[in-house]
Length: 188
Image (tube, rainbow, N blue to C red; front, top):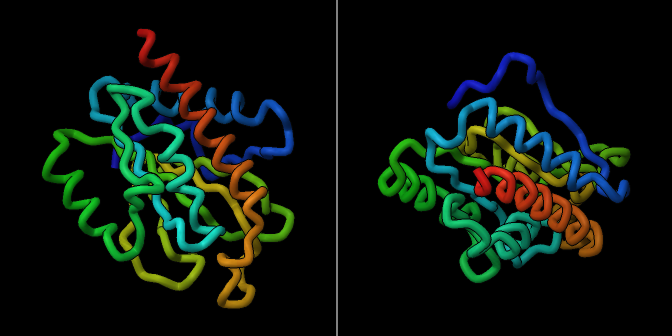
């Protein structure tokens, strides 16, 4: 894992209900990427999830919006080719074997407390995809971004009963924030 400036501790939260959340999140992403001197790496945005469950389609929705957006940021995981529990090991293998010195920005849906639903998080470390639904998958990412789509600890069909509106708001915020930071970095 790449080291990010010591001033970063813990998870930061952004409320998508605030109209400017994507700008604030974009600035935060930009600071992280500048701190690690991203130009030394091959940045990969790994969007995790599946379009078969509303609550888990956040990653593929973000990936879909970012496809072909930048030549310097590589995107894996979209609606037509999602990265999910059944193929995530293959995606990690592809990254290891096809990208020299990758920096992985992992994007995934997450579950949380009722007061956190609708928030985006950013953290300077990996995420554990599938943790909310008790799947054991490898930790992924040098930088992680999640959208809290529903409450944790509920019934097994929780991801299927998540509101699409919530997921779309979170996906738009994350995609626009990444576009904000990519646009800035690609200009220099």
